[in-house]
Length: 345
Ligand code: PHE
Image (cartoon, rainbow, N blue to C red):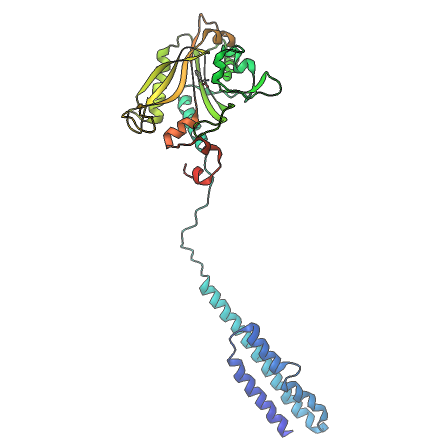
């Protein structure tokens, strides 16, 4: 029995020394537990051997054996707690939370450049007393052409390559001008001042300069004393608002069946200041819109007496305007949904 007792002392001393060397809970400590407390450990052997001892020796050895087991179990608990704490300290110092760091910016959406330009255009006209009037994208031949003084088979229809549906009278509007008729019929015989923003569609070859769908903003003012001077004045004001205080404008005679006289407005190239550059194709001028005095027939179709009322109208493309404002060289970018493009606005 003396031999067993000293064996127990040996186990206790060895286990206590071994536990000091352990640095990781997963493997080191588990191996230690198996070696000193497991089913085939020396301690278990000694305790099993109790049965072979004379009865009077058993209690003393049993007591000492249990003492050693409890001591080892205490070591196990202590060490495992110690390792857990060490791991916690390590991860706390590794993943320290610095509450004074500035927050990460949240990625927000941006407004599409066409929409932005549309908003700027509409804001300006709203301040002049024009109200937004929206009408449908799918139109009849009558509204898109005939009521605008463009009869069937008239050669001027070539200006508007059209998407037809299976019903040849139902088309996608090629410009926002049919909205003029809708607005007039709504307001006549009261004067009206409206802007008509909306998507238009043309059956065209897609290129850097032209898309099959694009926006237009139409303006229409009808009253008893509206003259070409009002048209020039208001559009000049608009150009200076959008392109800068010193922007010069010029009006070139043009032709639209629904206005008489008709004109196109150019602004002095703001890239070269009129000197001539690649943007204005060396002309010094940029074409930005079509306009004119509403044709008497169109006034009549809208429900106004052309002997009493006159009006002006204009139409422009916000994509074109956005291209000029931001130096965008390819109109197809507006529909590409490329973040690198869209995020710049
Ligand atoms: N609707 C014409 C176009 O699409 C533009 C325009 C509008 C011209 C109003 C004159 C008056 O080309």
